[in-house]
Length: 248
Image 1 (cartoon, helix red, strand yellow):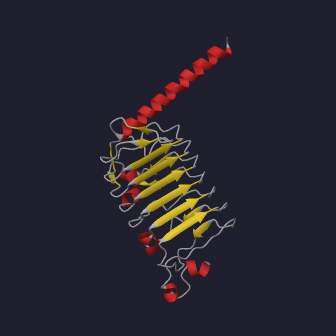
Image 2 (image 1 turned 90 degrees about the vertical axis):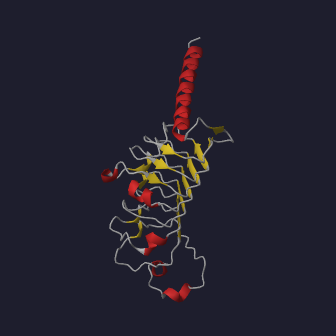
Image 3 (image 1 turned 180 degrees about the vertical axis):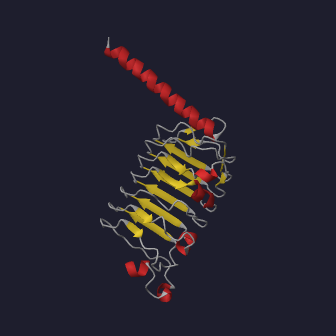
């Protein structure tokens, strides 16, 4: 497996193969691509990683940013990797990535940096689920604090069971989603607002909050903010009722 993955086999050995799947479970892998000097295959388009208990990094920070693996990757899915610290190096560019899915990665505090976010011009689907330590989806790059970020082709966005998530991004960048049609937000109790700055999603007209319930208050930021206010209000009412009946 290592020889195929790292390009030691002749490149034409799989020239007619459309899908080659490796299933690795319960391994001691900590990094998938650990050595910058290795000749990694240029034919990899889809990467699925799941149930890797010791897995901490897919790529290390010194992985060549211009490598074809990063430039040509189209789909990335990571599931049930509880030790994973970071998804990609901080300055990674994914110009061809169309689908990104992260599930049950409980040590991740953020998904990507703003530099990586700006490169996701082809991204169509983004799903983040069951990652209880994640605070923000996009982490700020200090030297690029006020640059607008445009997800040109993102159509589907989902946040499910992110108990610590506070926002998509806490920063001054404007986020623009010209193609966003579907946004699902479920079990994200700490999410007070979508973004601290201007957020534009002209095609979005509702937010799915679970069990076919839809919400909309004019725009994305206002809707998320109103949902949080109502949630806090309901908690206060519940506590008052509980205290009243417990003392009577």
